[in-house]
Image (cartoon, rainbow, N blue to C red; front, side, top):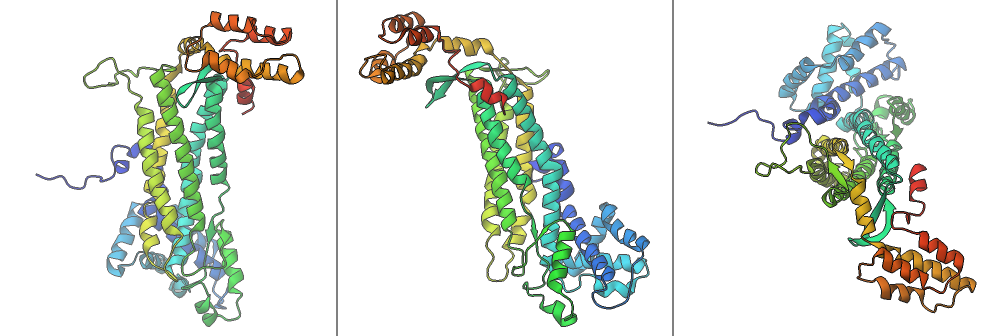
Length: 459
Protein backbone atom coordinates (compact mmCIF):
# COMPACT_ATOMS: atom_id res chain seq x y z
CA UNK A 1 0.00 0.00 0.00
CA UNK A 2 1.39 3.41 -0.97
CA UNK A 3 0.49 7.04 -0.34
CA UNK A 4 -0.16 9.32 -3.28
CA UNK A 5 -0.75 13.05 -3.80
CA UNK A 6 0.73 13.93 -0.43
CA UNK A 7 2.44 17.31 0.12
CA UNK A 8 6.21 16.94 -0.01
CA UNK A 9 6.99 20.19 1.77
CA UNK A 10 5.78 20.90 5.33
CA UNK A 11 4.82 24.35 4.06
CA UNK A 12 2.17 22.66 1.93
CA UNK A 13 1.18 20.24 4.67
CA UNK A 14 1.60 20.69 8.42
CA UNK A 15 2.29 24.42 8.28
CA UNK A 16 0.08 25.38 5.34
CA UNK A 17 -2.34 27.52 7.40
CA UNK A 18 0.50 29.79 8.58
CA UNK A 19 1.88 30.45 5.10
CA UNK A 20 -1.06 30.06 2.74
CA UNK A 21 -1.25 33.80 2.03
CA UNK A 22 2.09 33.56 0.24
CA UNK A 23 0.61 30.99 -2.13
CA UNK A 24 -1.68 33.69 -3.46
CA UNK A 25 1.38 35.34 -4.96
CA UNK A 26 4.37 33.01 -5.13
CA UNK A 27 2.72 29.82 -6.33
CA UNK A 28 2.79 28.76 -9.99
CA UNK A 29 -0.79 30.02 -10.24
CA UNK A 30 0.20 33.37 -8.77
CA UNK A 31 3.06 33.66 -11.24
CA UNK A 32 0.76 32.85 -14.17
CA UNK A 33 -1.77 35.43 -13.05
CA UNK A 34 1.02 38.03 -13.02
CA UNK A 35 2.12 36.90 -16.49
CA UNK A 36 -1.42 37.41 -17.74
CA UNK A 37 -1.41 40.87 -16.16
CA UNK A 38 1.80 41.87 -17.97
CA UNK A 39 0.56 40.52 -21.32
CA UNK A 40 -2.79 42.29 -20.99
CA UNK A 41 -1.26 45.60 -19.91
CA UNK A 42 1.25 45.50 -22.78
CA UNK A 43 -1.54 44.85 -25.27
CA UNK A 44 -3.54 47.77 -23.91
CA UNK A 45 -0.41 49.96 -23.90
CA UNK A 46 0.28 49.22 -27.57
CA UNK A 47 -3.30 49.88 -28.64
CA UNK A 48 -3.90 53.00 -26.54
CA UNK A 49 -0.70 54.62 -27.83
CA UNK A 50 -1.16 53.17 -31.34
CA UNK A 51 2.55 52.46 -31.49
CA UNK A 52 2.23 50.38 -34.67
CA UNK A 53 -0.11 52.79 -36.47
CA UNK A 54 -2.88 50.21 -36.73
CA UNK A 55 -5.61 52.70 -35.97
CA UNK A 56 -7.27 50.09 -33.76
CA UNK A 57 -8.89 50.96 -30.43
CA UNK A 58 -10.17 49.28 -27.29
CA UNK A 59 -13.30 50.49 -25.57
CA UNK A 60 -13.32 50.87 -21.78
CA UNK A 61 -15.59 47.84 -21.61
CA UNK A 62 -13.14 45.78 -23.67
CA UNK A 63 -10.23 46.82 -21.48
CA UNK A 64 -12.23 45.79 -18.45
CA UNK A 65 -12.95 42.40 -20.01
CA UNK A 66 -9.25 41.88 -20.70
CA UNK A 67 -8.29 42.92 -17.18
CA UNK A 68 -10.92 40.55 -15.80
CA UNK A 69 -8.52 37.75 -16.83
CA UNK A 70 -6.43 38.98 -13.90
CA UNK A 71 -9.10 40.12 -11.44
CA UNK A 72 -11.13 36.92 -11.95
CA UNK A 73 -8.17 34.55 -12.25
CA UNK A 74 -9.33 31.26 -10.71
CA UNK A 75 -8.85 27.52 -10.61
CA UNK A 76 -10.60 27.39 -13.97
CA UNK A 77 -7.96 29.76 -15.34
CA UNK A 78 -5.24 27.51 -13.98
CA UNK A 79 -6.82 24.49 -15.65
CA UNK A 80 -7.22 26.33 -18.96
CA UNK A 81 -3.56 27.36 -18.92
CA UNK A 82 -2.47 23.83 -18.06
CA UNK A 83 -4.43 22.47 -21.01
CA UNK A 84 -2.78 24.95 -23.38
CA UNK A 85 0.68 24.28 -21.96
CA UNK A 86 0.20 20.55 -22.49
CA UNK A 87 0.40 21.41 -26.19
CA UNK A 88 2.83 24.35 -26.21
CA UNK A 89 5.26 22.80 -23.71
CA UNK A 90 6.08 26.41 -22.87
CA UNK A 91 4.55 28.25 -19.92
CA UNK A 92 4.80 31.81 -21.23
CA UNK A 93 3.54 30.82 -24.69
CA UNK A 94 0.55 29.24 -22.98
CA UNK A 95 -0.19 32.58 -21.34
CA UNK A 96 0.01 34.31 -24.72
CA UNK A 97 -2.53 31.89 -26.21
CA UNK A 98 -4.72 32.25 -23.11
CA UNK A 99 -4.97 35.99 -23.76
CA UNK A 100 -5.51 35.43 -27.49
CA UNK A 101 -8.41 33.10 -26.67
CA UNK A 102 -9.99 35.89 -24.62
CA UNK A 103 -9.67 38.24 -27.59
CA UNK A 104 -11.32 35.65 -29.79
CA UNK A 105 -14.26 35.38 -27.39
CA UNK A 106 -14.49 39.16 -27.50
CA UNK A 107 -14.47 38.98 -31.31
CA UNK A 108 -11.26 41.00 -31.38
CA UNK A 109 -9.04 38.58 -33.29
CA UNK A 110 -7.77 41.64 -35.14
CA UNK A 111 -5.63 42.38 -32.08
CA UNK A 112 -4.20 38.86 -31.75
CA UNK A 113 -0.78 39.71 -33.21
CA UNK A 114 -0.32 42.48 -30.66
CA UNK A 115 -0.33 39.96 -27.82
CA UNK A 116 3.26 39.33 -26.70
CA UNK A 117 4.43 41.71 -29.43
CA UNK A 118 8.27 41.94 -29.67
CA UNK A 119 8.56 40.21 -26.29
CA UNK A 120 10.94 37.55 -25.15
CA UNK A 121 9.66 35.31 -22.36
CA UNK A 122 11.89 37.09 -19.89
CA UNK A 123 10.24 40.42 -20.64
CA UNK A 124 7.08 38.86 -19.23
CA UNK A 125 8.74 36.80 -16.51
CA UNK A 126 10.93 39.46 -14.93
CA UNK A 127 7.98 41.82 -14.55
CA UNK A 128 5.79 38.96 -13.31
CA UNK A 129 8.30 38.14 -10.58
CA UNK A 130 8.49 41.85 -9.77
CA UNK A 131 4.71 41.79 -9.27
CA UNK A 132 4.56 38.57 -7.25
CA UNK A 133 7.56 39.28 -5.05
CA UNK A 134 6.56 42.89 -4.34
CA UNK A 135 2.97 41.84 -3.61
CA UNK A 136 4.05 39.03 -1.28
CA UNK A 137 6.45 41.41 0.45
CA UNK A 138 3.98 44.26 0.89
CA UNK A 139 0.82 42.25 1.54
CA UNK A 140 2.13 39.27 3.52
CA UNK A 141 5.73 39.24 4.77
CA UNK A 142 6.10 42.86 5.87
CA UNK A 143 2.77 43.00 7.76
CA UNK A 144 3.66 39.82 9.67
CA UNK A 145 7.21 41.03 10.37
CA UNK A 146 5.90 44.38 11.58
CA UNK A 147 3.27 42.69 13.73
CA UNK A 148 5.98 40.66 15.47
CA UNK A 149 8.19 43.74 15.75
CA UNK A 150 5.37 45.68 17.41
CA UNK A 151 4.98 42.90 19.95
CA UNK A 152 8.72 42.82 20.68
CA UNK A 153 8.87 46.61 20.97
CA UNK A 154 5.90 46.77 23.34
CA UNK A 155 7.40 44.10 25.58
CA UNK A 156 10.72 45.94 25.54
CA UNK A 157 9.03 49.13 26.71
CA UNK A 158 6.93 47.30 29.30
CA UNK A 159 10.11 45.78 30.75
CA UNK A 160 12.29 48.86 30.26
CA UNK A 161 12.82 49.29 33.99
CA UNK A 162 13.09 45.62 35.00
CA UNK A 163 16.73 45.11 36.05
CA UNK A 164 18.59 42.01 34.90
CA UNK A 165 22.07 40.61 35.28
CA UNK A 166 23.97 40.83 32.02
CA UNK A 167 26.13 37.93 30.96
CA UNK A 168 29.08 38.67 28.73
CA UNK A 169 30.92 35.50 27.72
CA UNK A 170 28.19 33.75 29.71
CA UNK A 171 29.50 35.21 32.96
CA UNK A 172 27.88 37.74 35.33
CA UNK A 173 28.53 41.26 34.02
CA UNK A 174 27.31 44.83 34.35
CA UNK A 175 23.53 44.83 34.98
CA UNK A 176 21.05 45.95 32.34
CA UNK A 177 17.28 45.74 32.01
CA UNK A 178 15.32 43.08 30.19
CA UNK A 179 13.56 45.78 28.23
CA UNK A 180 16.79 47.31 27.01
CA UNK A 181 18.05 43.93 25.80
CA UNK A 182 14.83 43.33 23.86
CA UNK A 183 15.03 46.90 22.54
CA UNK A 184 18.40 46.08 20.97
CA UNK A 185 16.66 43.45 18.83
CA UNK A 186 13.75 45.74 18.07
CA UNK A 187 16.15 48.38 16.79
CA UNK A 188 18.09 45.86 14.71
CA UNK A 189 14.97 44.32 13.18
CA UNK A 190 13.52 47.76 12.42
CA UNK A 191 16.54 48.64 10.27
CA UNK A 192 16.13 45.53 8.14
CA UNK A 193 12.40 46.06 7.73
CA UNK A 194 13.06 49.61 6.57
CA UNK A 195 15.62 48.31 4.06
CA UNK A 196 13.10 45.79 2.73
CA UNK A 197 10.45 48.51 2.44
CA UNK A 198 12.76 50.81 0.49
CA UNK A 199 14.05 48.12 -1.87
CA UNK A 200 14.08 49.36 -5.45
CA UNK A 201 12.38 46.86 -7.76
CA UNK A 202 13.68 46.86 -11.33
CA UNK A 203 12.13 45.69 -14.55
CA UNK A 204 13.24 45.29 -18.17
CA UNK A 205 11.20 45.18 -21.34
CA UNK A 206 13.68 45.29 -24.19
CA UNK A 207 13.48 42.08 -26.19
CA UNK A 208 15.55 38.98 -26.75
CA UNK A 209 18.95 40.37 -25.78
CA UNK A 210 18.05 43.78 -24.43
CA UNK A 211 18.62 45.72 -27.67
CA UNK A 212 15.07 46.47 -28.91
CA UNK A 213 16.20 45.05 -32.28
CA UNK A 214 12.86 43.42 -33.13
CA UNK A 215 10.96 46.50 -32.04
CA UNK A 216 12.95 48.73 -34.37
CA UNK A 217 12.66 46.27 -37.23
CA UNK A 218 8.88 46.46 -36.91
CA UNK A 219 8.49 50.17 -36.16
CA UNK A 220 11.72 52.16 -36.52
CA UNK A 221 10.13 55.54 -35.81
CA UNK A 222 8.99 54.67 -32.27
CA UNK A 223 11.15 55.66 -29.29
CA UNK A 224 11.07 52.14 -27.91
CA UNK A 225 13.38 52.88 -25.00
CA UNK A 226 11.02 55.59 -23.80
CA UNK A 227 8.00 53.31 -24.31
CA UNK A 228 9.70 50.52 -22.39
CA UNK A 229 10.53 52.87 -19.54
CA UNK A 230 6.99 54.19 -19.45
CA UNK A 231 5.50 50.70 -19.45
CA UNK A 232 7.72 49.40 -16.63
CA UNK A 233 7.00 52.49 -14.55
CA UNK A 234 3.29 52.13 -15.36
CA UNK A 235 3.46 48.76 -13.57
CA UNK A 236 5.04 50.46 -10.55
CA UNK A 237 8.70 49.51 -11.00
CA UNK A 238 12.03 51.12 -11.86
CA UNK A 239 13.16 50.71 -15.45
CA UNK A 240 16.46 48.90 -16.02
CA UNK A 241 17.85 50.25 -19.33
CA UNK A 242 20.84 47.92 -19.66
CA UNK A 243 20.25 44.19 -19.54
CA UNK A 244 20.89 40.98 -21.39
CA UNK A 245 17.88 38.81 -22.23
CA UNK A 246 17.11 38.82 -18.52
CA UNK A 247 16.79 41.56 -15.96
CA UNK A 248 19.95 41.05 -13.92
CA UNK A 249 18.12 40.19 -10.67
CA UNK A 250 20.35 42.40 -8.54
CA UNK A 251 17.32 43.86 -6.79
CA UNK A 252 16.13 40.37 -5.90
CA UNK A 253 19.55 39.44 -4.52
CA UNK A 254 19.56 42.63 -2.43
CA UNK A 255 16.07 41.96 -1.08
CA UNK A 256 16.77 38.32 -0.21
CA UNK A 257 20.01 39.33 1.50
CA UNK A 258 18.05 41.83 3.60
CA UNK A 259 15.40 39.26 4.57
CA UNK A 260 18.13 36.73 5.32
CA UNK A 261 19.80 39.31 7.59
CA UNK A 262 16.45 39.91 9.28
CA UNK A 263 16.19 36.14 9.78
CA UNK A 264 19.57 35.98 11.47
CA UNK A 265 18.71 38.79 13.86
CA UNK A 266 15.42 37.08 14.71
CA UNK A 267 17.36 33.83 15.17
CA UNK A 268 19.64 35.61 17.65
CA UNK A 269 16.56 36.86 19.52
CA UNK A 270 15.08 33.34 19.60
CA UNK A 271 18.27 31.83 21.06
CA UNK A 272 18.53 34.59 23.67
CA UNK A 273 14.91 34.21 24.76
CA UNK A 274 15.40 30.43 24.88
CA UNK A 275 18.36 31.04 27.22
CA UNK A 276 16.38 33.46 29.39
CA UNK A 277 13.69 30.79 29.71
CA UNK A 278 16.30 28.22 30.73
CA UNK A 279 17.63 30.66 33.36
CA UNK A 280 14.11 31.18 34.68
CA UNK A 281 14.03 34.86 33.71
CA UNK A 282 10.93 34.14 31.67
CA UNK A 283 8.36 31.61 32.80
CA UNK A 284 6.29 29.80 30.20
CA UNK A 285 2.54 30.08 30.42
CA UNK A 286 0.92 26.63 30.12
CA UNK A 287 -1.39 26.21 27.15
CA UNK A 288 -4.47 24.21 28.03
CA UNK A 289 -4.28 20.67 26.67
CA UNK A 290 -0.71 21.03 25.38
CA UNK A 291 1.96 18.41 26.06
CA UNK A 292 5.59 19.36 26.69
CA UNK A 293 7.07 15.88 26.78
CA UNK A 294 5.67 12.49 25.89
CA UNK A 295 7.09 11.04 29.10
CA UNK A 296 7.77 13.97 31.49
CA UNK A 297 4.41 15.55 32.37
CA UNK A 298 5.95 18.56 34.15
CA UNK A 299 7.72 19.95 31.09
CA UNK A 300 6.81 23.01 29.06
CA UNK A 301 9.25 23.15 26.18
CA UNK A 302 10.14 26.45 24.46
CA UNK A 303 9.07 24.97 21.13
CA UNK A 304 8.04 28.25 19.51
CA UNK A 305 11.55 29.62 19.70
CA UNK A 306 13.17 26.30 18.78
CA UNK A 307 10.94 25.89 15.72
CA UNK A 308 11.69 29.48 14.76
CA UNK A 309 15.44 28.77 14.85
CA UNK A 310 15.15 25.85 12.44
CA UNK A 311 12.88 27.66 10.01
CA UNK A 312 15.03 30.78 10.03
CA UNK A 313 18.09 28.69 9.21
CA UNK A 314 16.30 26.97 6.32
CA UNK A 315 14.95 30.27 5.04
CA UNK A 316 18.34 31.99 5.10
CA UNK A 317 20.01 29.02 3.43
CA UNK A 318 17.52 29.25 0.53
CA UNK A 319 17.56 33.03 0.30
CA UNK A 320 21.37 33.13 0.42
CA UNK A 321 21.47 30.56 -2.37
CA UNK A 322 19.03 32.63 -4.44
CA UNK A 323 21.03 35.81 -3.86
CA UNK A 324 24.18 34.04 -5.02
CA UNK A 325 22.66 32.25 -8.01
CA UNK A 326 20.51 35.03 -9.42
CA UNK A 327 23.29 37.58 -9.93
CA UNK A 328 25.10 35.34 -12.40
CA UNK A 329 23.93 34.39 -15.89
CA UNK A 330 26.10 32.77 -18.53
CA UNK A 331 26.63 35.28 -21.34
CA UNK A 332 23.28 36.66 -22.43
CA UNK A 333 21.20 34.08 -20.53
CA UNK A 334 20.86 30.60 -19.10
CA UNK A 335 18.06 28.91 -17.21
CA UNK A 336 19.57 28.58 -13.74
CA UNK A 337 17.61 31.63 -12.63
CA UNK A 338 14.34 30.15 -13.87
CA UNK A 339 14.74 27.05 -11.72
CA UNK A 340 16.01 29.01 -8.72
CA UNK A 341 13.20 31.57 -8.70
CA UNK A 342 10.57 28.87 -8.30
CA UNK A 343 11.84 28.51 -4.72
CA UNK A 344 11.34 32.13 -3.68
CA UNK A 345 8.09 31.18 -1.99
CA UNK A 346 9.79 28.41 -0.03
CA UNK A 347 12.46 30.81 1.27
CA UNK A 348 9.94 33.45 2.29
CA UNK A 349 7.57 30.77 3.60
CA UNK A 350 10.03 29.44 6.16
CA UNK A 351 10.78 33.01 7.26
CA UNK A 352 7.06 33.72 7.62
CA UNK A 353 6.58 30.52 9.62
CA UNK A 354 9.42 31.50 11.96
CA UNK A 355 7.98 34.99 12.45
CA UNK A 356 4.68 33.39 13.39
CA UNK A 357 6.43 31.10 15.88
CA UNK A 358 8.31 33.96 17.54
CA UNK A 359 5.17 36.08 17.72
CA UNK A 360 3.20 33.26 19.30
CA UNK A 361 6.12 32.43 21.55
CA UNK A 362 6.05 35.89 23.11
CA UNK A 363 2.35 35.35 23.89
CA UNK A 364 3.27 32.28 25.93
CA UNK A 365 5.91 33.73 28.30
CA UNK A 366 5.86 36.09 31.28
CA UNK A 367 8.68 37.84 33.12
CA UNK A 368 9.88 36.40 36.45
CA UNK A 369 11.04 39.53 38.27
CA UNK A 370 11.76 37.62 41.45
CA UNK A 371 14.24 35.36 39.67
CA UNK A 372 15.91 38.35 38.05
CA UNK A 373 16.25 40.15 41.38
CA UNK A 374 17.59 37.09 43.17
CA UNK A 375 20.21 36.64 40.47
CA UNK A 376 21.33 40.25 40.80
CA UNK A 377 21.54 40.12 44.60
CA UNK A 378 23.77 37.07 44.42
CA UNK A 379 26.34 38.94 42.32
CA UNK A 380 27.38 42.13 44.11
CA UNK A 381 30.81 41.78 42.55
CA UNK A 382 29.42 43.22 39.31
CA UNK A 383 29.62 46.62 41.00
CA UNK A 384 33.40 46.37 40.71
CA UNK A 385 33.26 48.23 37.41
CA UNK A 386 31.37 51.14 38.96
CA UNK A 387 33.68 51.36 41.97
CA UNK A 388 36.96 51.31 40.03
CA UNK A 389 35.65 53.82 37.48
CA UNK A 390 34.50 56.23 40.20
CA UNK A 391 37.90 55.93 41.94
CA UNK A 392 39.69 56.69 38.66
CA UNK A 393 37.59 59.83 38.27
CA UNK A 394 38.57 60.92 41.80
CA UNK A 395 42.24 60.25 41.02
CA UNK A 396 41.98 62.29 37.82
CA UNK A 397 40.50 65.19 39.80
CA UNK A 398 43.21 64.90 42.47
CA UNK A 399 40.69 63.79 45.12
CA UNK A 400 42.28 60.37 45.65
CA UNK A 401 45.77 58.93 45.56
CA UNK A 402 44.92 55.29 44.89
CA UNK A 403 47.59 54.17 42.40
CA UNK A 404 45.80 51.45 40.39
CA UNK A 405 42.02 51.31 40.96
CA UNK A 406 41.51 48.55 38.40
CA UNK A 407 44.06 46.25 40.06
CA UNK A 408 42.53 46.97 43.44
CA UNK A 409 39.06 45.87 42.33
CA UNK A 410 40.46 42.97 40.34
CA UNK A 411 42.07 41.65 43.53
CA UNK A 412 38.76 41.93 45.37
CA UNK A 413 36.36 40.54 42.78
CA UNK A 414 37.95 38.51 39.98
CA UNK A 415 36.56 34.98 39.95
CA UNK A 416 34.96 35.50 43.36
CA UNK A 417 31.46 35.83 44.70
CA UNK A 418 31.41 39.03 46.80
CA UNK A 419 28.52 39.75 49.13
CA UNK A 420 26.83 43.01 50.05
CA UNK A 421 28.49 43.37 53.46
CA UNK A 422 31.94 42.67 52.10
CA UNK A 423 31.54 45.17 49.28
CA UNK A 424 30.17 47.90 51.57
CA UNK A 425 33.05 47.38 53.98
CA UNK A 426 35.48 47.70 51.09
CA UNK A 427 33.90 50.97 49.91
CA UNK A 428 33.92 52.39 53.44
CA UNK A 429 37.65 51.77 53.61
CA UNK A 430 38.45 53.59 50.36
CA UNK A 431 40.36 56.86 50.38
CA UNK A 432 38.05 58.73 48.03
CA UNK A 433 35.97 61.89 48.25
CA UNK A 434 32.92 61.86 50.54
CA UNK A 435 30.64 62.53 47.55
CA UNK A 436 32.01 59.54 45.67
CA UNK A 437 31.90 57.28 48.73
CA UNK A 438 28.31 58.22 49.54
CA UNK A 439 27.25 57.57 45.94
CA UNK A 440 28.97 54.17 45.86
CA UNK A 441 27.44 53.13 49.20
CA UNK A 442 23.97 53.70 47.76
CA UNK A 443 24.68 51.62 44.68
CA UNK A 444 23.11 48.18 44.33
CA UNK A 445 23.24 45.63 41.48
CA UNK A 446 19.62 46.29 40.53
CA UNK A 447 20.13 50.09 40.43
CA UNK A 448 23.36 49.96 38.45
CA UNK A 449 21.67 50.00 35.03
CA UNK A 450 22.78 53.37 33.70
CA UNK A 451 20.51 54.78 30.99
CA UNK A 452 19.01 51.41 30.09
CA UNK A 453 15.42 52.42 30.86
CA UNK A 454 15.53 55.79 29.11
CA UNK A 455 17.29 54.32 26.07
CA UNK A 456 14.48 51.78 25.78
CA UNK A 457 11.73 54.33 26.26
CA UNK A 458 13.12 56.35 23.35
CA UNK A 459 12.90 53.34 21.01
